[in-house]
Image 1: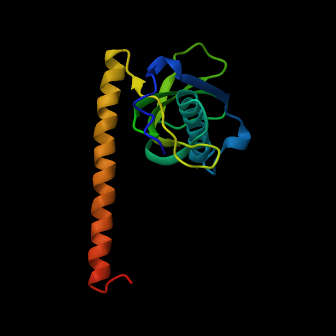
Image 2: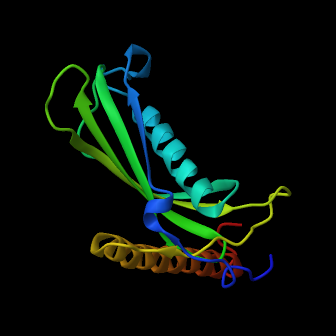
Length: 178
């Protein structure tokens, strides 16, 4: 990968922000009669992938789901809105923040937040190799806070990976967990 990230012009957060809406039906339910968490996770990944592709100007693949929180059950007949935006960018990776809201399809009540997630995407070229992404330019105070929080999550993610790798290497050197 060439170091083009510093050469790419930054894009404002609003340039790739998107909302995906979907009415939940009976085929989306789990054994409890509420919408299956995996259905919501797919919608989250779809919306986040669209945002990552828009921001990076091409293909982007899901590298990790850092966190997925379900706050309230989603029911059949709910109109679900999945709102996603790029929170942070690295050389070839992007953190996308997602909020999941639900409202009854036939009522005029405000939507309720039912979930949230943070995903990391990697921009790739036609050969599947990492490619540079433009830096995200936070526009509002909320965007700036999300950018700073994303940097904290990245630091923790990298520290956790490093600690696990070191533990495994130590155990392997001791002949444990061959």
